[in-house]
Image 1: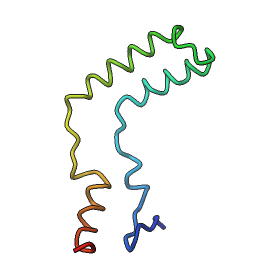
Image 2: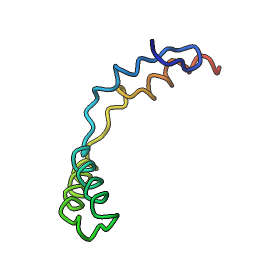
Image 3: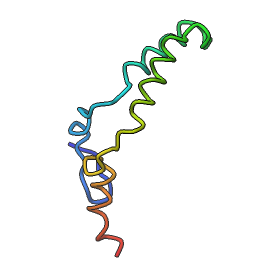
Length: 81
């Protein structure tokens, strides 16, 4: 059963398969920080990969029609009028 937001049930499993850009780079950077006791001087390679990935994502627009916030706003619009 999904979570209830107001009078609307949400299935979180449906939104779990969304592609998360830069997740691998973020994970490798955080693992490196954990291994090196938060010393980011030793994690420069992972940091550069993460920055490069995030800069590449900057120009790509998000498809607002596929986000859960879009659908919640669309469905809840009539309740507040």
